[in-house]
Image (tube, rainbow over all chains, first blue to last red; front, side):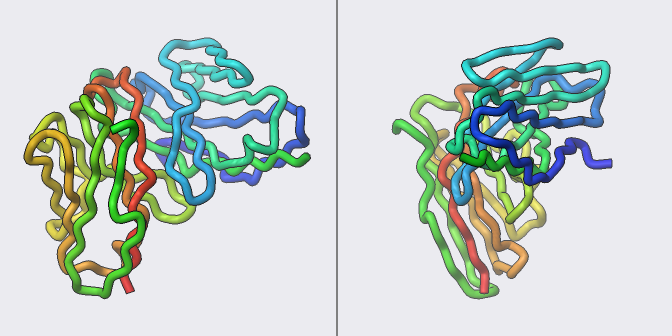
Length: 113
Length: 115
């Protein structure tokens, strides 16, 4: 079992819909969770981070964390074509440092106009 | 600088050659990370610096890879006797400290192609 798993996709949604991206992780002691967006040929850029169980909202983005079930998700409301990218889930397995973030392979999202 | 700067953006070299990749982190960021990313993969951790010292180099694949950060700012990743399998995008990131609460900011990457 990979340490951080994501469906590779592609996930295709129509413009204006909600895109739901999921990530599961194997280390129950993991402390912090990050969603990065990566456009083709570009470097990852942070979308959101979450540390506590529950939801965290930032504009059109909502991160959801459930430590008991070991999953973290990202919801994108009112999806736009500019949201089309690969979304990488990264997990920090230990408190106090993020040098060894464990990354998923990413989910490719396509938002169709 | 305003962002993380990496040079060169592209490097094509022949098998067996020596390569240096440079990273200039965000001013004031004490933590610096090197990752590499192959097509269709997530970033793979290589090495982490806190200040001038390599706090964790456990991700370096073998002794052909070495990195330095002599003055606690600019870092150079050095690859000796390059192999075709070293071809990847090498990403540098920095954060304010090495604390898990700090967000990584990535540079644009250096794409290395070993022929």
